[in-house]
Amino acid sequence: YRLLERIVKTLPPNLRLLATTATANNRVMEDLAAVLGPKLDVSRGDLNRTSLSLQTIRLPTQAERLAWLAERLATLQGHGIIYTLTVRDANQVAEWLKTQGFPVEAYTGETGDRREQLEQALLNNEVKALVATTALGMGYDKPDLAFVIHYQMPGSVVAYYQQVGRAGRALDSAYGVLLSGQEEADITDWFIRSAFPTRQEVADVLGALEESPSGLSVPELLSRVNLSKGRVDKTIALLSLEAPAPIAKQGSKWQLTAATLSEGFWDRAERLTALRREEHREMQDYVSLPFGEHMGFLIDALDGDPSVVTKPALPPLPTTVDTETVKAAVAFLRRTSLPIEPRKKWPIGGMPQFGIASNTNIDFQAQPGKALCVWGDAGWGGLVRQGKYHDGHFSDDLVAACVKMIHEWNPQPTPTWVTCVPSLRHPNLVPNFAQRLAAALGLPFYMVIAKTDARPEQKSMANSTQQARNIDGSLALNGQPIPPGPVLLVDDMVDSRWTLTVSAWLLRRSGSGAVWPMALSQTGHDE
Image: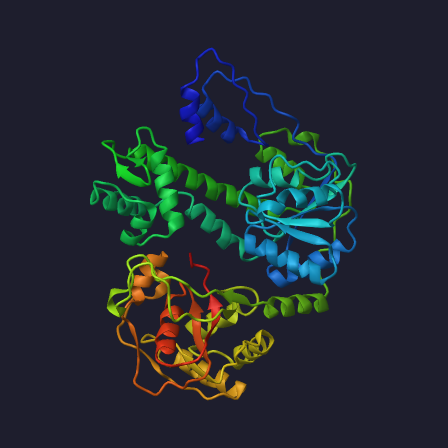
């Protein structure tokens, strides 16, 4: 909208402009009026959808919601959309439903060239449902869509109404069901917090540009500020849309301009952040409503007339799930593992303390590895978190889970010994786990890598360049003989992959065989 505002101001005053949007409340209309100009004729349609039967169900765990989807999809007539908040959830829900025999597909911003094919498959009723993020959004129209189910609560009434309103456009009755889970608050909070750069992020970017009068490219910025690429991109995108803008792009580089950032930028950011938190609270109120009161609540929140609402055309769906189905969902969540792709090049800037030149090929690479879970997820993630930060000891259940994963993985050539990544903060945590894992695999354990320098935790480093710099020179072999065979390299967390990359490089150049990295958890911070 900031870019649109610039464009509108350049149009001749006598030029007529047509602006269309999906469902919007008065607040959104006021924002649009501020962007498009005061002389607007507004036309709004009827918000009441008599064909939609709305329902909310609290099912805190992912396993319960997966079980509910499997049980209900078997009884729901027609075809529909299942919305998730994240790409990972869309892929996971689709995979689960496929294991239960349902013809479904995931549809996300990463779907790429298959988008049109999947849209057509749903139009032709070739799939029971698409499990989608908001990538399946405005412009998609299937009039006979029989249900829209939300796997988690969206962040606002406007967003929810736009999505659920895709059901029942040409049907007498359709379901709109919102499943509410315990992780959605954290996800929504992340979206709200990350919508605008912080004052510190802006200061870091502007400070780096001030020190480089000839300008900096994004990769060069990443080497100077401890921010992720996503945060740098967000910061420069929003700063460049200000009028006047404090930064401008010249070729591939960003430079400071003579303009300063106005306080209005922060006023707008704070106002919109507060508004989004209020919208989130409004959705929490919506989840608490009894059956039959949802449509009236939505229409009132969208500044319509709730007095015209009639009772739902369909009965409420069951709100409970079978224990055995939940157990199957838990087993599914615990059987998935994630790949650890080996890095192939050293970072820009190299690793000077190891004598490694910038952006060169890694001559002693790790093999593709495996992580048991994502940090904090509904499978093994909670147990990993408990072991690291509460118990100070990883459970035997995690040992057994890793043994099972390694047997299914079956890396070739098979590891003949086990080692691990050391830590000065938790000196016994990973070695203890790795020794028990080695014993369960029937392999010897050798502690051959040493941490030579205390550094900040890798998770505090926000981009790959900073993460590589943080590990440079901090690991070494401890002088013990290096067995020649293939080795399983164990760590608790994998974030940037630089720790595993350097460890594998040290081992292989000193005579070990293939290095197979294995971690308990992937943090999801890697870029």
